[in-house]
Image (cartoon, rainbow, N blue to C red; front, side, top):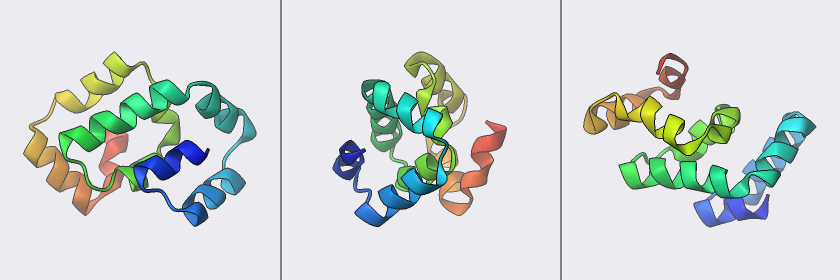
Length: 95
């Protein structure tokens, strides 16, 4: 999961993630690293500054097909979405 360091995840966050996530999902993330990176990059490029927190709480979402991932977030006005995500990442559950 060293690839997450490229996205400003620190070693402690990665270790906590590995210790508190199901092995099956960790394996899926490792296997689909390119897709996960593509989805992280989408949020990053959109201007979402707390994408790390979103990933750590909703990591399974990052295994979605990229076009479906984009569709989830593109339904909303980017500026409003970014502001709402800054205030409370739990809104991801309702997207």
